[in-house]
Image (cartoon, rainbow, N blue to C red; front, top):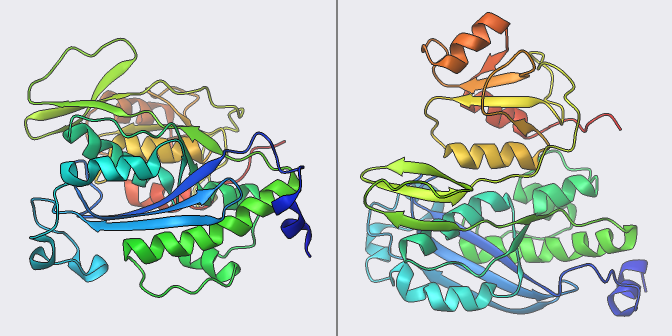
Length: 326
């Protein structure tokens, strides 16, 4: 019996660890603010990562299904599927009282939160755990942070990539040994709070204290809580081209992005970066797809000599952020 097996039944299992997990994968019509979920899968696990049951559903997005060549779900396949409000209750029952676990969890959480907001409900999720962040905490020797690399590390065989049920199964099978390795090493799980989107409204509304109008698209407005904890890392200075980002760097965003701004910001924060609301001499990097625009941030970046990269380059840099000097 290995040390990890021994921990499964030992009283030394960390008391601070959650009592249960919901390993989730959603396939979507795309990555933008108005995209929809077209399939969802949940593997429920107990506190030590053992599978209790699993669930899968298609969802009619009431729009074009997006990149069919990736997920394989055509309009004909989805036409007779239930609408999200019709599966919301059962989905919620699978999530209730558990930590949501996903690979790049902020994306899955944001998509789920939006769907519940559209349905005028709130997903019963209070915390999430990203398996990318856990892999970094465990210092796993992975060539990259793709799900297939994590699966290969633990010998988990992928059968249908980009199928929500199989992706959730693969992640559940890879999460259990990661969880046990964390328990054996006394690693604190990288749990983050889930702040639900509060509502979808057809007309602009005055933001409440602690909220910021966001996710503007069409005639509606998403309103989400944006209060974030302070970055725990000191600012290491400016970003240097052809070198990785370092935790603590101050990053500002300007202009439209193809991926939701708040999603990019949350990814940056999860990587250990400081998201700044303005540009100053202390700003390490400005991310913008239109560096020639005359916004206050781009003008200040030019005057301060702040490095500028576009969204695609920043997304690549996020894959390998150097730890802060300890």
